[in-house]
Length: 295
Image (cartoon, rainbow, N blue to C red; front, side, top):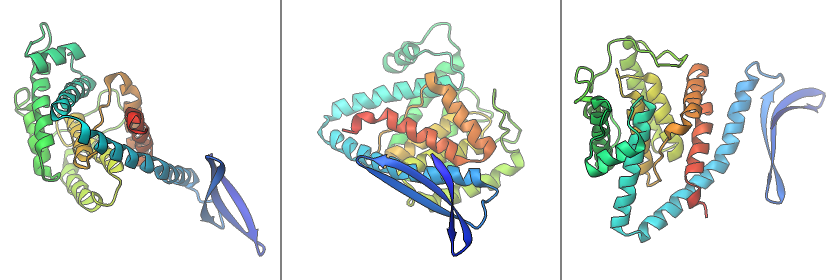
């Protein structure tokens, strides 16, 4: 818990944020000076304060995940690595497509992508986009350069060119809404400045931020801009995994079954303009998905 405390020094009142937590056999205390008055944005300061505290804990665990992941990769035969990658590609394709409304089940997706068996009585669009997504996923893994607007436009084009060629690989010129969300994406006239700002931020941040934090923020920021007529969520999750894979970390599959918490974290972060909401959700999700490497 974060609390506000007051100290009187030489007759003057000073306010601080305080946080205590037990670490093994000791109590660790953190303090942040607020000033002679409690700021009006105290709740926002509390959220930022607790996020920075927990980053210290999370980032140490993420470093351990990366180290153990690298060690395990070294001793895993290439054929086994390829099988793991194929399994992830199928699950990731199923979940990311299903989150966006695909009717394909996990079995449908596996039969289609691994055995070439086309499911009956399922939308042709879903089938074509699942095939395109898996192919794009492997292209993403082989891509050695860094994120640019050009490569992101290309990824969107490859994802949608067989189903929605009129909007594939193009910045939208019409207003869109997100089904079931209270968040309204930016207007078309805002997109070019926002994208320019995004890639400037990315260029400055990619070597400064923890890679897991960078992956989370790339996802959040890009999907909030929502530059495409379709495919924003899928491309944002592809960008997220590009960052993780590029930094030799396990990739993340956000599951359809847990989509409500994902939706809620995104929407709350977007409406309140508070990235910490999504970061805390993402960090916990990433940690839970990779506890096997914390040995």
